[in-house]
Image (cartoon, rainbow, N blue to C red; front, top):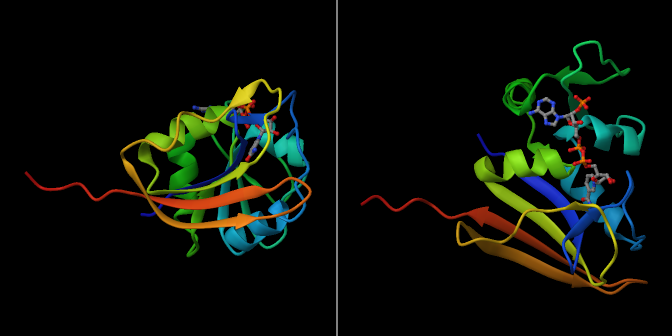
Length: 163
Ligand SMILES: NC(=O)c1ccc[n+]([C@@H]2O[C@H](COP(=O)([O-])OP(=O)(O)OC[C@H]3O[C@@H](n4cnc5c(N)ncnc54)[C@H](OP(=O)(O)O)[C@@H]3O)[C@@H](O)[C@H]2O)c1
């Protein structure tokens, strides 16, 4: 089943700082919304708490080790595999939307990555793994001018060539 990541990072690969995203690039949130609308979203507990609510029009699945953790209109999963199994029960695209811990676990099994690179360098304590690697090929890109410019790229995992 397809499993895609959606991430925004700075030029120096920062994705978060002290529980928040350390930039405001106008239009970038709209892009996130367009990509993820009507999908099932998998996110770490810390990312959920930084957003603070389920995102409208999308299924929210929160990954946590805390079996007592519940949030209204959300499903919790005890690990990434369980989250993927739950997400695949909906007839919707599935996206992993962070944060750092969950991206690291999901990237090795991701079939695609929507990455937006914000054209600035910022301080931060959470980073995206090294990307792209040779495992992925670029299928689409668009450059957006804004208060901070950003480059959107869609990568797909290369097909394995049979020996
Ligand atoms: N720029 C972007 O695109 C983007 C996107 C998303 C988030 N962010 C940023 O990233 C930061 C948050 O990332 P983060 O790495 O600190 O946290 P995170 O990945 O959002 O969440 C980490 C939490 O997920 C749960 N978890 C992780 N691995 C697990 C596993 N194998 N099994 C069960 N539960 C697991 C644990 O929850 P419990 O502690 O409850 O057990 C863990 O504390 C914030 O600054 C946020 O703003 C940026």
